Length: 434
Image 1 (cartoon, rainbow, N blue to C red):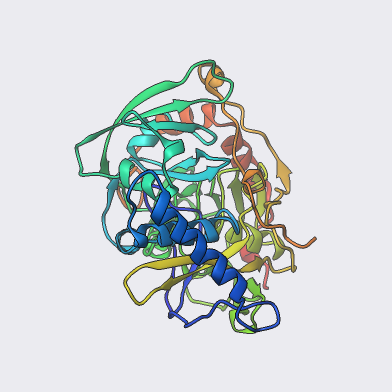
Image 2 (image 1 turned 30 degrees about the horizontal axis):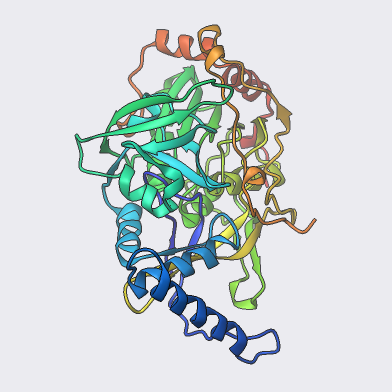
């Protein structure tokens, strides 16, 4: 079954497994139908239809009830109308248009989890923790999360006005953003020094592993004259996640054996273990992985696998902490639901739900002086209401940036500087036989 995740203007940070719809019935804990609950629901529905100040269609009321039921479970379960479900399917495979932000609904507020790199929202300066107060003048408190999605999305080249409240700001700010195609190319790479490369994954989409391997092959070819590739910095900062199968195959690119991730739910048929296997294209040079509070879901699977198997040094800040798995379940009328069915566990058996991946070497990002006034807090899974407890550059391949650009990037990014220093000091893992 295809492993998928909504990846778009506002994905919900899900790692989703596609499953077939399953017939269900409302049942009491003892297995029988809870007739009192059904009767109560019917009475309330009838009262609203008769006495509510406006005429509301029964279908709208029932859909609203379904949304409330699912969203009351946790931040990631939700009901999707036929239109919303169709949009979700388009977002996982085709080109789509919007501003490029990952959001969550928290205490009635629409909060930016992270902007997607190289999108209009990213260029407009939106950051993790920003609160979206209104869209084109309409207050977001009046809207469901899916309604927020519909209003932010729109045709390419059109404008949307978002009123944003930054952390510690005294007054909100209205930002005009022109909608554009959200790029699906998810891998960037750049030579930091001879034989040492930076590889940035912005998300986990359908071609991420293919793009990653192409970038590494290009780096190996370019560095061949200097003695070959000697180290990689894998940058997962602000990567909100994506497709589970891509997280597994990215991890497998750097591993030859052992567990990558396991999934455990209430039902035995949701349990599964993903394991690495030796491949001819396996990459075995020393690695440092960069993470921060914007690294979520699939990013945490990769970081957790490489950490637990001692394949890479994890550097940066504690990750988001989204360790749950959602099934995408289509319904017979074309609608669908996202339902949390399991937690995932790193190879050593740890759940990172609401905790995140703790780096081996904690290095807090220090923004350049001119950016310090704009610092904002970073949102994590544990900050979301109803979160589950855990029980305890657009061109593919090599960047053409000049050496000056690399030096400037290193000068502005203390975490990347440290990562380069560390990867140069790590043992030659390519000489170690696993």
